[in-house]
Image 1: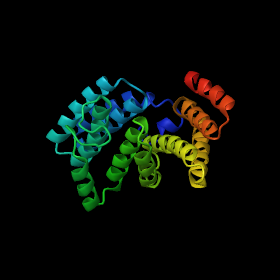
Image 2: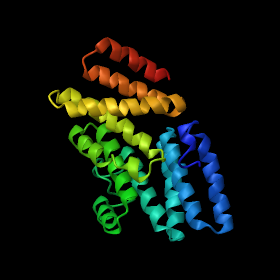
Image 3: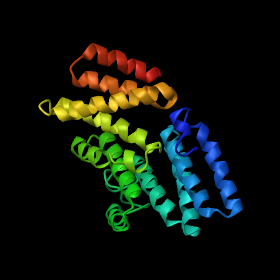
Image 4: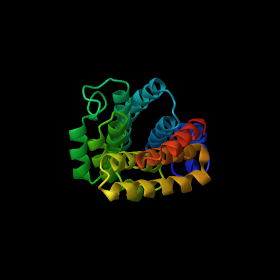
Length: 239
């Protein structure tokens, strides 16, 4: 419930304590796999809610060691992707656009995931590369990863990563629509993602309302409607 449902109706932060409690209960009951996945989702929800990166990195480092000690390779591989992304955002990687460093090696993880047909892992690698590329201004890579990560909505439809993908896919589509006005597909995809986020914002405004407004502002800017864009940017910052 707290990993796939709560954030569609309530503030995502409300699920963090419940997930950590479930982790402790799982460890006590001997359900180690369940306990480790609760750690993963608690860390992911913390990142989604905007908790300071230093605090999240510290938690991820500790849970990564616990997962390794307990032999939970699946949860470990998934958490390592987000941990490396956090390290990149902190400037603690050689190439901030590549998920390679202390936590993981991008090429090795993708090769192993493809061999194991671990589509969820591939999805979150592509999603994190999308987020990093957009935030760091590499629009070409962002556009590539936006397309590559769209299947997460089919692979794991309830997780909070779906909101992340829709948000950054939408922002990327707005930027591409502005830089390549002749390609209508980006404009269409921007509207598609915006409409999806608008629907979610009605049910969970705390998680999606500001994201929808920012996407709306970026779309207005891409279409050259500067007054509307400025007004909507201001709304997004106070929502």
